[in-house]
Image (cartoon, rainbow, N blue to C red):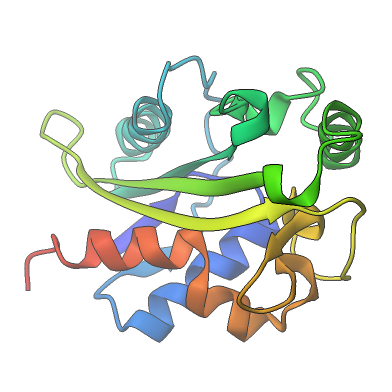
Length: 195
């Protein structure tokens, strides 16, 4: 199935394309010849935002659309920033400012209490008037005291994986793709795809 990825983020596009290939999903990402419509992510859940993005793009372009919404849930912050993760430091979606605000909010919090998880919801809209297919993936970890690693994007430099003894940003891309929240969400979605 040819699908448009409802995201203008090139890092996310590369990651999702590689995961789709690794999982052997029957999806091919296509690049539309027109700009993607802007979508205001004003839903109150990750699923609502992912569905809205996918449905808006599918309606605008007349093609099936795939979208994700990812949140970072930090236990010491009562689950914040949650589904507001991309705009945690303000509406401009600045990753460095988001990370700085997160680390400032956790200053003085001991490592054992810095537990967190990435939660991702993938939505595939084939027919804008029909029900979307959804997949969810979660990766548990904790927030490091300082950024580490040169890969990844967003909060990856401060998301510590105890089983790997490094941040997501320090993992080689193939390793990250094989255990990430997006990988798990796409695998979950794949189990719902018609074969």
